[in-house]
Length: 128
Image (cartoon, rainbow, N blue to C red; front, side):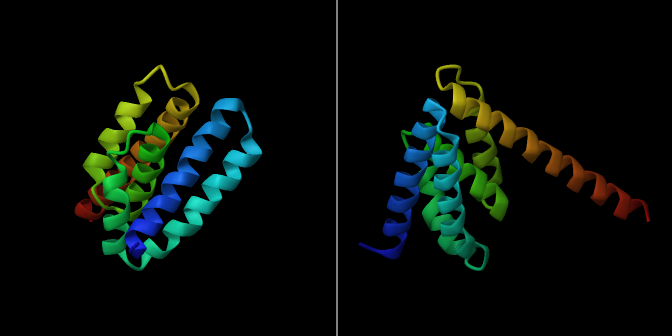
């Protein structure tokens, strides 16, 4: 199994476990699983190609928790931002997945704040 496949499998398993923990209200376990995903994705900061190879296929995973975490980390890396944002929008609009939906809404709100701040900074720089 390649490094990419191993990372995808690990993220997939952790994200599914994270989602299940959220559904039952086990926030301690959910936080632990989310932290583990974050640790795995840290190496993508220095290797965006690896991040892209690992995360982008996960945006189409059947599990909404996998798609959610993949989209959040892809947005953090600045890769496939439109597809990642669209994934968050889709999850945020699905009433059948309450806890995951709420997390998508929160992350989408944070992403929109970041986009507005970036846009405002660019406008300020153009005005100078």
